[in-house]
Length: 115
Length: 112
Image 1 (tube, rainbow over the protein chains, first blue to last red):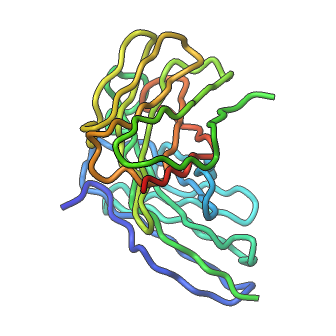
Image 2: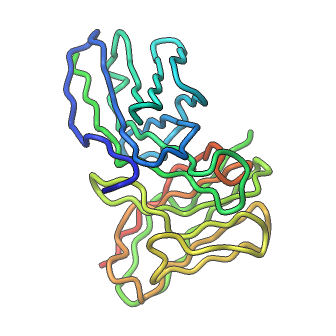
């Protein structure tokens, strides 16, 4: 079993829909969670990060963490064609600032928002 | 303008040749990373460096080599020993190990 799992998609939605992107993880040591967005043939860009359980909102994006279920979500409201990209979740195995600490990435979910 | 640069954007090589991919950052980050991404797949870690003059193998280091002589630079050499080198290569850096990683634009390598 992979440490971090994402449905690869593609997830196809109409413009204006609410999108839910999800990751499950197996290692309870993960305490800090990130979402990256990667457009085709580009490097990933950091979209959001959150430390704790609960919600964090940034514009149309909301990150949600449920540590008891080992499940994180990224919601996109009023989705736009420009949101079409691959979304990757990531989490460091040992919290912050430890030698040898690494990010573990999910495989990514491809999102297509149709006009 | 701070960031990570990778060059070239596209690279073509003949089988059996070594090739070096450049990665430079001016973010003053201690840690740097190289990933490989194949079509429709996630990121696989090749090598990482947490400090100058030190680097560690990642999950798929065979056929690759790196150096970290300067904080700003972390070049990756794809050797002829790498059996399937055609891929999209991404360099990243972070302030500290385990922190948010910032990625370069990537180099697409094609070996024929």
